[in-house]
Each structure stands twice: as structure tokens, then as C-alpha cells.
Amino acid sequence: MSHTGRGWEILTDRIIGLLNERQTPIVFMLWGGHARKKRSLITNKRHLILESAHPSPLSAYNGFFGNRHFISANEFLEKNALSKIDWSQSEDFIP
Image 1 (cartoon, helix red, strand yellow):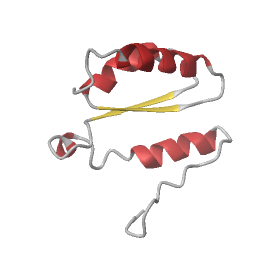
Image 2: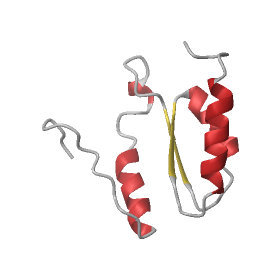
Image 3: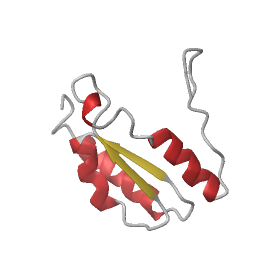
Image 4: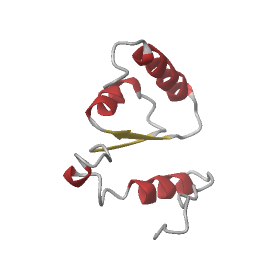
């Protein structure tokens, strides 16, 4: 919310719109209420939209934990003959 009303909405809406036009399938992860409102900008049926609570400490237990978005994204990418994402960024990562 610290960036609300400062023009970022125009930029992010335009970027989402441009990505939506791509024919290569894309995974959109919309985490949190503000991100979920962007769903209407994603109209291309080739893309996957995953929605969840925001991963912040205040709301992660309201649906983020256990949402399997990382697994779902990789399954979708694999199904569409695209490279999976290596989500591990630390030695503490447990798949």
C-alpha cells in the first residue's frame, strides 16, 4: 500500500496487458487482494492464473501456506513444453 496512488498501477497494468498478449503460456501468481484485482487484465486462455492470500506474516496462514503454487506452476510449464523453474534459492529449501 505504500506505493498506492503514485503511478505504479498504470505501469503494472500495462506490463500485465503486454504479457497477456503473448502466445507463449505464462504463469501469473496473484498473491493478495490488490494483485487478485489484476485478474481481469489476463484474458488469454493460454495462461495460468494462480491466486492466493499474500505471503506476508499477517496473512500467509489464510491460504498462502499449502497453496502448491510452485508445484502447480512447474506442472503447467512442463505440460506446455517449457522449462520448469528451480525455486530453490537457499540451502534451507525443502521441496
